[in-house]
Image 1 (cartoon, one colour):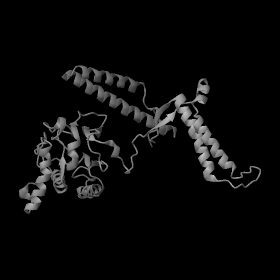
Image 2 (tube, helix red, strand yellow; image 1 turned 180 degrees about the vertical axis):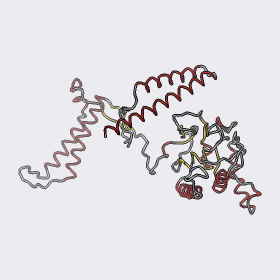
Image 3 (cartoon, helix red, strand yellow; image 1 turned 45 degrees about the horizontal axis):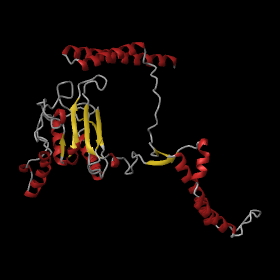
Image 4 (cartoon, rainbow, N blue to C red; image 1 turned 135 degrees about the horizontal axis):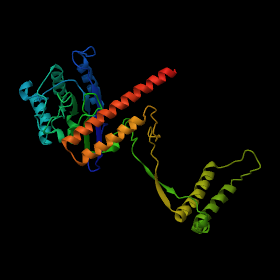
Length: 358
């Protein structure tokens, strides 16, 4: 699981392309579900993404251990001076951003899938964020069973400068059975151009709106009507009448342009008077698709035992935040396990009851 936050900064240039975060889950090596083509498929997908998007991040469980080995090519690994210069320029980005070339890692092991990850990064000018940025910069914290690093955030070179923080959260039974969650923060980007379809779907456009009619200001509304505009309206009416408009006939020779001009002029007079009399207010006319606010869904399986364990868990969580001792941490973990166990049992019982009814 990954938690991503983005902070907007208008002082920086807008993104020219979208920022897709591709969440990855590669099956464990030497299992019935593993595939030798997993990384080839991932590389093909990344190639397709990089054609359309400038900034790309791959996040998730890669099931590979890379120790702290280099994820970039050295000049001696390339052939020809031009290739060497090209590679060095990509690596120099780390130096310019004060990001260490050598990653920190508490996992000293490198396996076959880890080699594939490193080759994948080298071949596509990508960099592993773990052990390089933010709170994890000096650590390289373990992400799985407190024994290995298999969950990564892998970033394109152009995206690195926007990372504000990267951290591996403490293990929680609520997120996964064995994996720790990754927390990623980005800053300096403009959200105006970060959208899925190339159109600005999230931007709010504010429009001016005249306030509602107030009967107490009726006379004031009349006084605000400009007499000069009324005279202009009379002239337009005379022009329409001169067109020999006969309402008794079904089809009359009416100048449509003059009628539209007349109505626009009339609306303008009323709107201007209303604006001066009642005032205006701003409102957003942006359409937020899929953002309908829904009421909280009632979980039928969430019984009294679940309520009790949730209260106890929250109590322990607040206590640990106030006083971070080893004992309070152990109490919090025990409360978390009990809460998860009670919820799992409640869900199981609920499913059994439903199956009996069927």
